[in-house]
Length: 483
Ligand SMILES: [Zn+2]
Image 1 (cartoon, protein in one colour):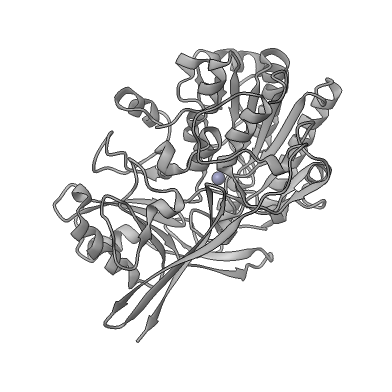
Image 2 (cartoon, rainbow, N blue to C red; image 1 turned 135 degrees about the horizontal axis):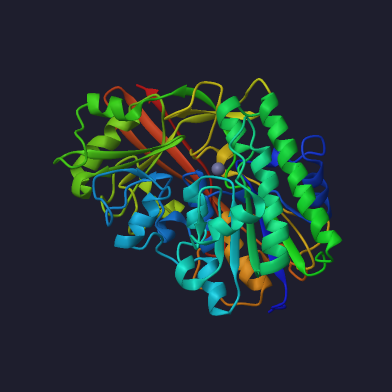
């Protein structure tokens, strides 16, 4: 057990790939990583989209455990046949009917120890909301340009700091404001045990301009400059010694090969909407798509899987326990997707490792965006691998961790650093990165499934690494070989 006087700051760069943390693009982060611990084998949860990874960071659970299946999802306990985007104010409406998340967050656990969790987010409203849905009851705060939890805080913040800057080509002005609020208000006055600062770059620029585009590179440099301001403030205010800083990204990135209007194709193939018998509700998530069969009907799910497997863009497919074994699909439980709110089928689009014009690896089909722009959400290794760095008295210095780690490990590791016991979690304490920790053993296994059709064979493989009981999804892909 460690000191209860420590505090921890998490900084997220949305969509940052490890390959971008270079001295040329991000001098402050590169120096930070060099001094502290660099995690060379870090993992997002699947699907590799933002809000569910944020939820996994604060709960230590895979999506099957915390119940936020993706950015676009169906919560049958809220609305059985409609896919919705997990955004404010929709999430507040969900909360009136059913718990938004099925497992406790760091904010919930800290409050039991009389400590606070405060998040400052410049990403989507949904991302910010998921950091602490129970703020009204358990305390702590979430600060976002559109709203605060508790709500009354919003006017206090804008009175002190002014109206939030609007979104620009890059979000530099918003990130600067977030650092102002984090330092002058959150750290100086509230002194929470854990604070979280979410930078919406490089994600915002990469979606609009592509990975490695000039605007995206500028967004990285600007975000890094704001990170440098935060570190300078900690140092100038004597907080270096008692503060551990963890820097993370929610997911990696690919470049879009081609946009697929999957719902139109599915309807044209004869699948009615999900509120009809034999129908399917579709939740599109960039590099992946979730499907909810009417009544979780196994025959419908099997017919859908068979149709998907024959498409040139179809990658790995997992099936929920509710629809049971589907030939050619792998179980959702293998990759943390199984749970009360699991989709009946989850499909990653097919991907490859070709380089784009700027030299960044990874192309993928997508439900939105445009060719050559940035995207994520699939089971590509380029999206499932993301960034984690840590520095502070609790961590080793100048170390590299090769063992698999993931976003699900943040919450248990933070609670360990604070000397607090937490809830049961899927993630683990990253003891190999802590000052007194030793190396970790791990195993990597590839699971395969196939299905033969008259015109060929669908074959998929999903690779998973495990450390003890904790699992990380390395990658999953498929192809179709004509007979
Ligand atoms: Zn993101």
